[in-house]
Image 1 (cartoon, rainbow, N blue to C red):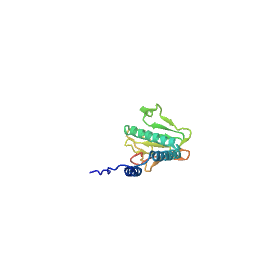
Image 2 (image 1 turned 90 degrees about the horizontal axis):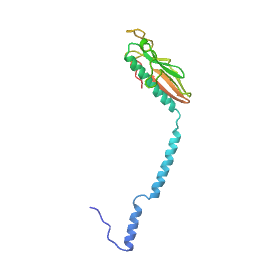
Image 3 (image 1 turned 45 degrees about the vertical axis):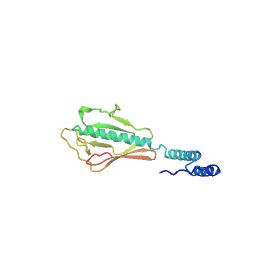
Image 4 (image 1 turned 180 degrees about the vertical axis):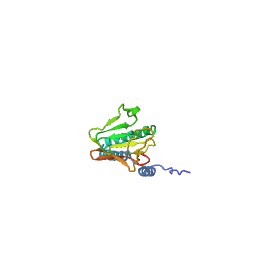
Amino acid sequence: MRSRLPRLRGRRYLKIAKNLSETFGFTIIEVIAVLVVLGILAIAVVNRTGTQGVQAMAEADALRSALRYAQSRAMGDVYTWGISFTAGSYQLVSDNPDTANAVFPGQGTNTRAMPANVALSGANFILFDSRGQPVSGNITTPGGSAAVVTGTQTISVTESSKVESVSVTPYTGFIP
């Protein structure tokens, strides 16, 4: 049951009502002041993070997609598929004579060039066999085999001081 304010009249009622209204809640000025301070802090945090390394992260994600695509193509073929690397680009490669110049999906070409401020370093080739495993050599004949890579293969994507690593796990070909 809710308690009721006593029915008072005159000055005593006004004094109780005035004290009650002063003790509950915040004034609109206090709320606005807090919102202004929070807005200033949010702007400071956003400006501090900046956009450095965004291209390296984007190119590393694109490289992961390209590696997964090459791996999936290899798993549907008896020949090796993979990616070859230079400092400024990477290219889809295959030993299948029937699929010369295969292209990346949605790009219309088998080569992806890095932006001017992004560089690649690490392995020269990452190849996959029909099981999706990274291998160290080409399979050029149906039924052929190549040695499985026993160590993690890593490609570094660098933009100024930001480095993103793309790795291929040995034996399984997992690309995290």
